[in-house]
Amino acid sequence: MKGKIEWVRVSAVVHSTEDREKVGEAISTLFPFEFEIAVSKAKGHYGNPMEYLEVELTKSSEIKKFWKNLLELLGEQAEEILSTLEDRIDEQNVLHIRIDKQKAYLGEVSLTSGGDPIAVKLRLVTYPSKREKVIEFARELCTIS
Image 1 (cartoon, rainbow, N blue to C red):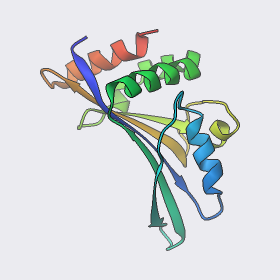
Image 2: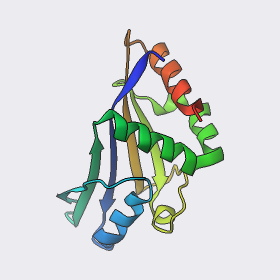
Image 3: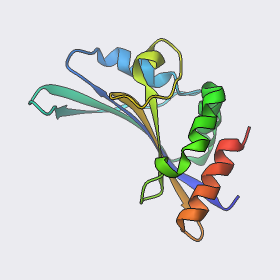
């Protein structure tokens, strides 16, 4: 494997109608270990108060554990990530995965294309840093069991 995951960021928006604790619980569904959530305040499109929760992983041991756990939680749905890889990787070589926030709160990890997800982003680094290499590396990541 010629690459690495530089960082993982897991984030979600807490709307004014939501409970921050519950959104934090939804995020924690994705983690097999203790982690720190950074909270920042924000304003919505119409000036409504919101909060932004984010967990950033940079230690390779935590990244590996998180990724292995996420693939296990997704089960068969990991195939969907695999089949849509090219659409999920942006120009900065970040792999984007959207998890259903409501289902995660109930303990079920499910991909979503709808709004208001838990966003999971993985920064992929390959040598050389060509798009084909990044996609090839992402394929390997998604097929490691």
